[in-house]
Structure formats: structure tokens, C-alpha cells
Length: 260
Image 1 (cartoon, one colour):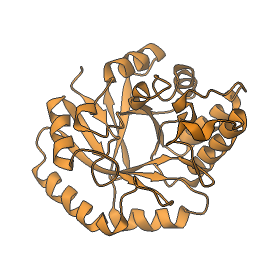
Image 2 (spheres, one colour):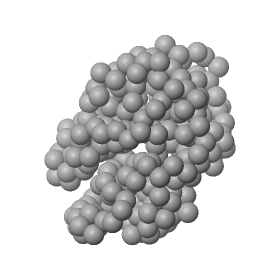
Image 3 (cartoon, one colour):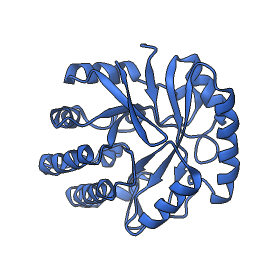
Image 4 (cartoon, one colour):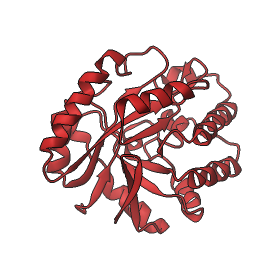
């Protein structure tokens, strides 16, 4: 694996991860990750996998100490923040309060339905209509310009439910807005351990976004130290095949690049 890599998506025991901050960071060092970000969940629905807000001061202190002693691998303080209609002002407040280096914007909920947690919930659903609702929310998230990275772009495929409708025009519209907002999207490699068994997003979307000039980054979406940097060789092969020659990351909100 090439040493100059970024992994900007991972979770600890503060949300739904199974390893501590120090264990995750050590794994990134061991795997030769150059730029590593931890991004625990922040949701606007009650669930077991959101970081309790009363733990935010503790989390800030952990990052402050870890950054002081970081050695070799640059550590970034990120957050994966859900997009929910009407949440915008709360996101603004929390960004100011926590001073994250960057935030990943994700859509896990359509209304009160968590599309990410139970395959059974998809049974009987109109899959095309669900994709349409999902992409509409993703587009609104990008339009808010409150986020830096679009997380797992085509998440609805997680349990193997694929749209039969052509969403290429919607993907193009979102991609153009990502570029206009100076954001990026991630190649999220955790899709390889889900039912869909493929990277997020699918290669056709990666090609489409490359043609639009949209910047890309890498995220393992690791929930355990053993998963840091998972399937990155495959992700890099895809990026090279499509034509990407660099990935980006965000430090203190500023976009920077690494050659791949």
C-alpha cells in the first residue's frame, strides 16, 4: 500500500465503534496512513450510535492531547454529521463550538426511517422512490454548504436493493454542486463488507464525478482498529483507472491534496 494515503472516516467507542481513539490512531500508524481522521457519529435522531452531546468536551480534550503527541501520522478531528431537514442552524452552532477540522455529511434517515440499520425495513418499499428521496436530501445537504465531504454517496444499495430508474441526471446535479461548494466525496470502502459487497459509490458514479472535476478522498468507515485502511488497494486501483491522480483532505476547514 502506498504510504501517502488519507483515511478520513472512522468511529470509536464514543459512537458505534469498538476501539478507542488511541487504538484507532495506532492502527493508522501501523498501516502507513499519512493523514488520519476520526469521525464519530452525530445524529439528530435518538439512536445507540450517536455520540452523546455531554461527551463532546471529553472528545475535544482527547483530540487536543492526541494532536500534541501525534507522531508520523497527522491526526485530524472530524465528525460524521447527519443531514436532517431543519438541522442547519444546529450544525452551524456545533461547528463553532467544536472546531472540527472537517465534517462528513451523511444521510441515514428519510423522515424517521433509518435506511442504514435493518434490511427488513426495506421489504415492500418502493426502491426507486426511496432512492429519489435519498438523493433529494443529499442534494439539499450539499446546497447547505455546511459540510466538507459527502459520505457513502449511494448508501441505499447497502442491503442489495438497487434502483432500476436512471439517476444519472440527479448524480450529475449533485456532483456539480459538490464542485461549486469546494467539497469532496469519499470512496468509502466499508461497502465491501456489507450485503452489496462493493465500494461506495459504484464505479459508474466515480467515473461520472471525475468527468465533472469533483475532488475525492478515502474513508474506510472503520468501526474497529482492524478495519482502518480496509480495501484501500482496491479503491486506489479504481481511482487510477478512472483518472484521479490525487486525493484531498481538510485541515481546519481548508482543502489540501496528496498525490496518489
